[in-house]
Image 1 (tube, rainbow, N blue to C red):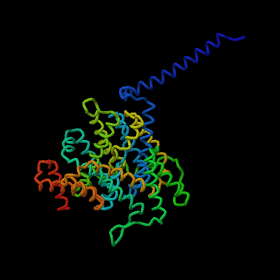
Image 2: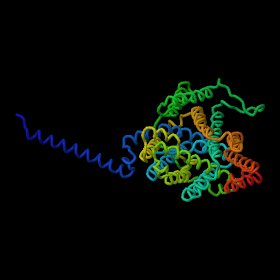
Image 3: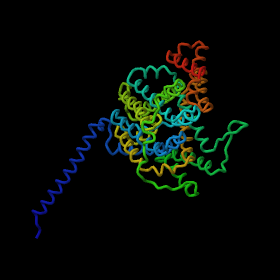
Length: 459
């Protein structure tokens, strides 16, 4: 006999369970809907999570590259690795929850090189003093983001110099990558010369660069990260890399926690360093955010960018918070465009990236295995992408192009972003004044030129 009452009870119970599960899912969706306004941005939870995963894998190379760069400044590698993850995570949470933007943030490439090779290596300051300069520049950037000073300064710096700064940082980063790889080496006769591709590390660095370029052209998911891992695996196969495991508890953050020397960064000699951190971070951030905003459809019918002020505040305050844990300036990553292309439209994308940064802390052994030649290949590739800004310069007006070229060329040749900016600004002002175009030199540019002249004269 069939117990119809029992069957009906089971059916009712099953329906009730399905209803409860649907209700829980609906409640979760409603909470995320209210927080991130998903329907308003024509997206959903699944799309945002996939977009966050895409952005993270596109920019995850920074968790391997940044600790290697910072370690050369004397920073503990394990602490630098954890600082990179925590700094990136907090910044992403700020961007996602406060500005509701689908932008991933992490310690800036180029700025970390300036930190290590110029401020610490060339100028001889301790990494604690350099961190103090990062903190002060972050405070200044935050103050500017809270006022109209930011807009005034952004508008007063010529477009040609803005693009040149980004390209110059790229060329500086590229020289460091080539030097680290052994592709370019010192020469007493010619200053620099070509290294030997007979060296395994040099050959693998070149292979890493080419592999990244090929996979990126083919739109392979996480091209930079997977190329670095592939070259590391090749190095391990030939005995060039030691296997130390993949997962462990995160290393201690104690060596870098609140280690910045603010008093030391207030010396007169650090003014140009602070300004370099400030300007490069500010213009890089502005360019990245504006580019991502258009791709993510964050522009209203009047052409105004939604929540741009909140996004700039989140970005600027991230550098301050990052200095607490031991990061060079934290900035928005142009790689966020990959997540936007995957459908990311809200801060849930950024929050997802932040959560993945925290998860990455448990892969410290893997980070320790990544050799310098693998990170060098990534540096060279990122550097070439940063050079794209030169295409936006007006090459017909030599009073614009010459200062831009001076900025770009002098950054790597003087091994200093600060010197490149200073010489570019001075050249621009001199050419405009000498050719009867004084109206194109703003008051703020005069002030900056006076500071740079004082730097070269007395320091």
